[in-house]
Every structure is written in C-alpha cells, then in structure tokens.
Length: 232
Image (cartoon, rainbow, N blue to C red; front, side, top):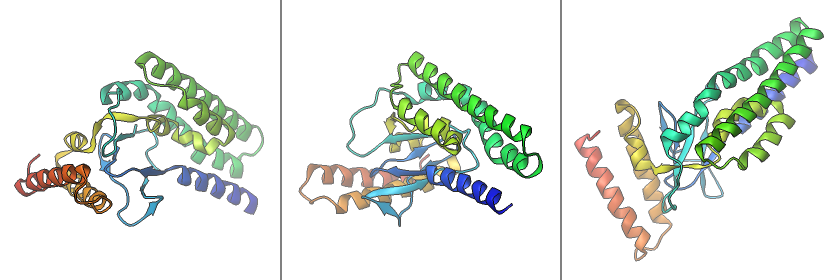
C-alpha cells in the first residue's frame, strides 16, 4: 500500500510541477474565464511564476504577448478553434490518470489496471495526433509538439496538460491590454491593476531616459485613468 501511495503522490507531484508557468514582464495567461499575470512575490530568472489550475486541464490557456514583443500571427479565435476539439480527450486523460488508475491500483490490480494504463497511452497519442493535425490545418507551428509529445509519452502524468501546454507553445496575437477586454466584467478591474503593477516593475528596470520607460509610463497613466473611471 505504501508503494502504491508513493507512486500516486509522485504522479500528482509531477503534474503539479508541470502546471507551473513562467511569464515575461507584462505577459499574462488567458483563458475563457480569467487573466493571470502570475505571482507578485515569486520570480525565477526575472520571470513571474504562474500556476495553472490543476483541476481544469481541459480549458485551453494561452500566453499573451510580453511587453515590447514582436507581433504574433496566431489569432486567439484560430487558436481556440484548433484546441477545442481536444477538450473532451483532455478531461478523459485527467479521469484516467487521477481517478481510474489509482482506483484500479488499490481495488482492481491486474487486468483492469493494465487496460486503464493502455487506454491512457492510446488517448495521449490520439490527443497528440489531433492537436498536430489541427495546428497544421490552422497554420500554427506544430514543431514544438515534437518535444512536448516525447514528454507526454515518456512521463504519462504530463499528458494530462496536453491541451494547455500545446496552447502555451506560442504567444497569441494580442497583448495584455487587449486581453483584459476579453475577460468577464467582474474580473477586469483586478486584471487591470495587476497589469499596472507589472508595468511599474518593468519601469524600475529601465533608465528614465529610455524610450521604453516613456512608453510604459504613458501606458500606466492610461490604464490608471481607465481604472479610476471604472471603464470596462
């Protein structure tokens, strides 16, 4: 029993580590219901640490453009259309890895466990193939999926995040300010203040005479004005 519990704990731990995402200055994680700029207190190599919701691996998540980044040719609508068909398979993978397999490990070892394990691998391969095909059809670079796919098949708990990690393999073609307009009204104010805080930190890293410092100061002023007016 101890070895089974340890195996489940290791699998869960690997999955949680895979849910950690690093964000550049002014970059945000966008999903249909939220916009996150990561932690204000924890950074790794100057990047903000963000955590994907461990309970919703079936909800597509994307990274916005960081500050001063070049344009991306991937539109949000096209990225969503590409990944939405894999949502059901992502949910199934979550159930297989963290419900079916642990249950079989304790209550039905043998063939039931082996069948669940095979189904998990088959589903992971099917997700990889589906996402690859959808990316190619939408004109989105599928090359990053090669490395991700090896990780998913070599360490099965990572395959639960297939949908989200595929979406995070590129930046969508909009910055955080535009992304704020796409989140629910009740969350716009929080997202705007988080963005202002990110801009303030970026300004501290630049000289006052730097052109980028001036651009950031202007953007912060605009966002502060919008926040004070309660603009949506």
